[in-house]
Image (cartoon, rainbow, N blue to C red; front, side, top):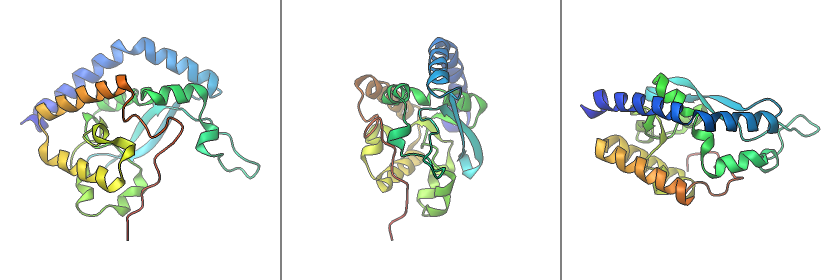
Length: 201
């Protein structure tokens, strides 16, 4: 009952209110990134959603597109802008995903939407993370995020799929706010990205 009826309504109302209330902040971030990224404040990428259906995820763009003499992107640490680092530190780059929630591509709470390339590497059990909509935050995010292994993340994602409830979602939402305020489990480092997932042989 909760997953089918209440959760979508909860997602829509909260994401709409969030976009309205946070609009001044979103405008400030957009203006700052327009300047630091030479006119490119947004990052859009294809991600798999519920049942593996591909959608366009939107985030604030925290890295520029500087390349070396051969046309290859410079390392992430060299492309991450000063503004981008500040935005990442408190996960403000994720706020635009409220638009994805409003559209119905995502939920506020659920397994994080990862790269399309990862679909081919999941085990049957790991692929169960796609039985529900992906979320802006989730059970794995409040239990270690980038500090735990991919295998541990997927275990937590599948556990969430099997235990979804209003009580659990409220717990995850409150813990997420607490972690952001305390800068806990936000990232291994603001200038690092998670290593690419490859299954263990």
